[in-house]
Image 1 (cartoon, rainbow, N blue to C red):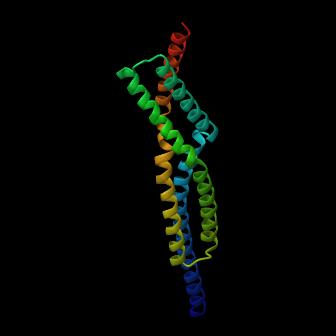
Image 2 (spheres, rainbow, N blue to C red; image 1 turned 60 degrees about the vertical axis):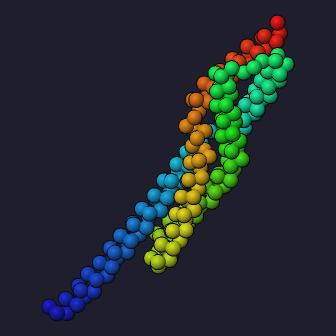
Image 3 (tube, rainbow, N blue to C red; image 1 turned 180 degrees about the vertical axis):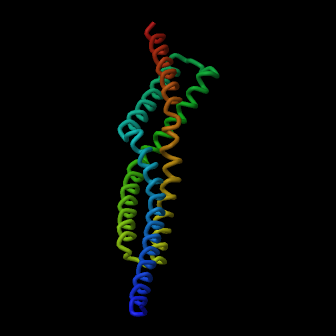
Length: 187
């Protein structure tokens, strides 16, 4: 009986250490998945509004302001309070689009790079290339990079998405103002 007990004991010890390693791998994968979710959020913001659309909106805003300034000077019009608020709001959208335009490509490049790095880290977690401490060190570096990108993207991209309908309403009002000034100058 004793001759069977020792091999069973070794088998049980081998199985228990395998389960521990599986739990560690699962925990590491879950940690990586949380970072992947943050990156997916940034990617969804990038996908919501294309670079071309941002450029177009920035160009339209600039064109409308140039036209309005020219018409106000030529027609010697004093801007009333309502239109002044509208133009201030519209100018604010121009600043948002300019900032997004300047930051769009760097955010795309950083997002793609972080996806690659997380994929590599995930493969390493599966194959247990690193000791637990080394994995944590690499994970913390990636976590800091992902959170930095997420915070930056939330201040650059999220505002243009959140104000999309407000911009469209302001755009419509500015276009109407431009049209009315154009008609009054033709008379």
